[in-house]
Amino acid sequence: MRMNRYEEIWLILSVGVLVLSMVVTGYQTFAQGMGPPSEMETIDPQKVDETEPFDNPGVFEVGENEYEVVMTLQAFSFTPSDIELPVGAEVTFTMTSKDVIHGFQIAGTNANAMVVPGHIQTITETFDEPGEYLVLCNEYCGAAHEMMSTTITVK
Ligand code: CUA
Image 1 (cartoon, helix red, strand yellow):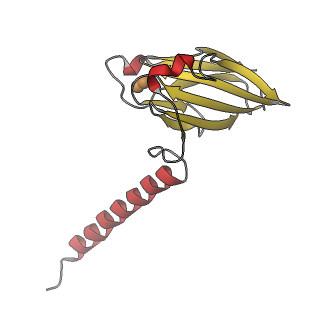
Image 2 (cartoon, rainbow, N blue to C red):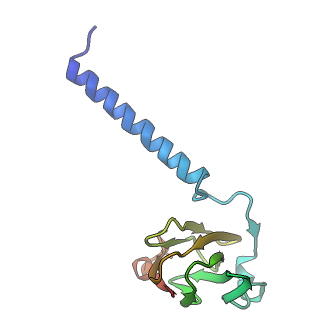
Image 3 (cartoon, rainbow, N blue to C red):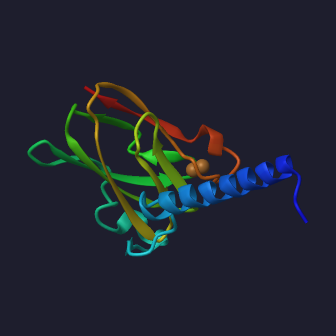
């Protein structure tokens, strides 16, 4: 039986969209490290405050033009909350969650990670433009999820 020509076109288009979205999701999961953690360092989520380096969250200069931001995420905040970084520095964010799964997304950049309790997530970013960057939690984490944000000042 021969299908109607338009039906055929729609069928091809819808299969195409499906395949494309699978490819995009797969790419994001594996290439961009947005998927669930696999080879990450682990940490006892009950003892984050007592475990290095999270017993002392903050911004640290670790090399020439290299910084590390040690950060904890918890409902519904990021610690430290006011981060200042120099333009052009290579910045590694070392993060963990003290409670539930949170997200770490820096608006206007490719930085995007899932921060899972029990695991240490790292993500590296270089800010080439000065400005205020909005950091958002993009994983639903409870009633005030929408309010969970902070800013990074780059100058
Ligand atoms: Cu933290 Cu949503």
